[in-house]
Image (cartoon, rainbow, N blue to C red; front, side, top):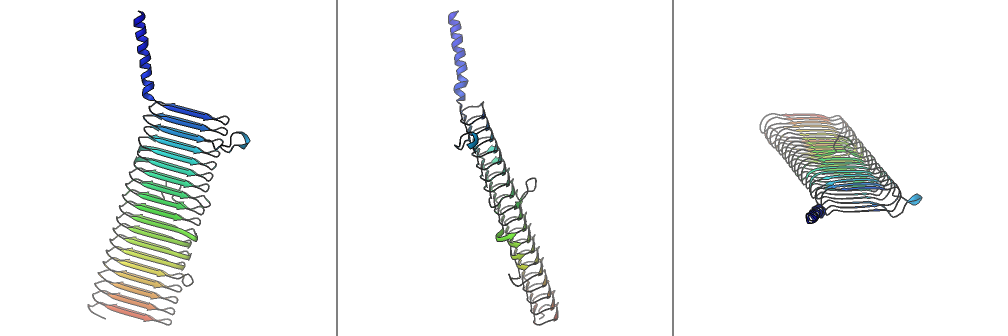
Length: 469
């Protein structure tokens, strides 16, 4: 009987030892401050947890399941506890399932970090050196990477990642900034940098594949989306690129890319600039949009639903400009340059292969200009130049391979050009003040030149037969 009991006891001891050897978890907790709490739960295998706490009233909770999780929580900047401590009242919560890596470093006061990782190959790194910063990371997938660095005060960063091989980086070095990143596809990259004076907001969502988004916010109170449901950058297509750079203050930018292989660049502010608005919608493929806004109070709207279109909007010194570009055709190009004050430009390109250039005002010469270009034909060319005050130019271009040139300086001029047919050419040049020109070309191979200087002139040209001049 003794042998049987001994054998049974030996067997029980062996069986009890097997799970312990299989788990092979490691946990180290070091507490040098006061009133710290640390809770570590390891139910998987090959997990590693390190918690280091200094200062006062710091709390850490680590839960590890699955195989191969690693967590590091550092709540200690070496100042010790008591009245000299500057690493107090921090909270870190880490929940890992799978082979994941998490590091949380909290070196000042009242920071909160929450990390949830489910899947293999995920990595999260949070560094909080300011006060009252919040960071939340939720990773549900594989090979996801998130980096958050908060050195200002009262910042909020929220990263939600699913899918695989997505990367997110957030740096908040000023105060009261909000950064939100949602990644649901694969191979997406998002970068948010918030510095300057603070109060900036960025919201990025990537649901497609192989997209890239960069948001850089200096100055104060700039928005690329809001802190709720409005996305500053939304990429549901594939291989899109978006870059937003905001300085100055009160800038607002939004980019929506639902097509493929599009590129958008928005620069707002510069050395002097405030209160601009830029909106880019690219639902086609292979489009390019560049918006540059300095001065103040300018709006730029670009909608590219066709393919392989190009748009450039440059709004400069002074401001209160408006540029609205709609490209629903293919392989069109549009350039809008606005200086001075209160310029307006509208471009609509429905056909294919058209080119439009609008140049309004200079830094010291130009206000209240209006230009409208509608190109519904193919391979048309339009150039509008406006200097001085209160100019108005309107072009309607159908047909094929038509060309229009309008140059107005002085004040209170009006030019209207309508082209249909094929291979027509129109030139309107007006200086002085109060002149009007109206040109209509409805057949083929027509040529018209109108050149008016002085004041109060009027010219009307109608060409409706082939070869007329």
